[in-house]
Length: 187
Image 1: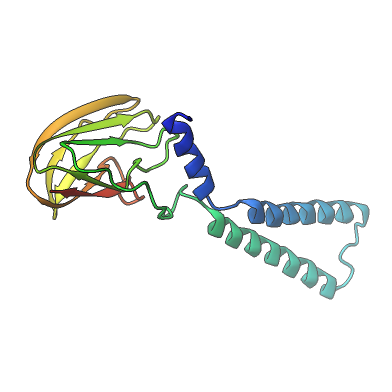
Image 2: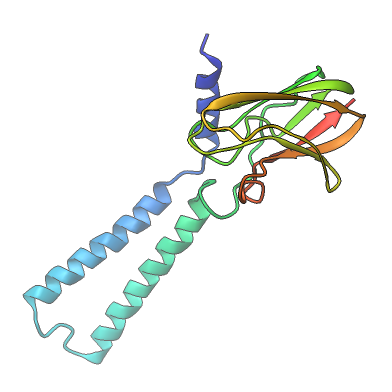
């Protein structure tokens, strides 16, 4: 039996988009640049005609555009808008909301959805990431409760939650906008 974090890491790598197309197109661009530089050094009069010059510029522009397009298409959660990946199913309702931040520094929690019992609830948050994070729970636009912001530590707080749907998110900088949020159902 594997430890939980090993299975979790395997799931993250399996869900990540392949970078092979980026490496292939980027490698072609790098090879083109080296070939062009070597040919230009060996032949000082290169390109001899305007048509050759235009062809070189056009080829270079196409390779740069293709590299940029493939980089955007194969980007994971780094920068920009993170891709939505399905997380594990919400656990059965308990009186504790246990969340953990991505230990590698990614802007995500280990759960995209959770369920707790109505009434007194404990919010336990583990952040082994090098970035500061917290858990803020809101209903509508109103903050109900928030944990302390921690880095490489665990924090816990309690709240009395009425039945309904809530959102939980990290209120540090633009972490929520980058996708560090989830849905909390209180039953």
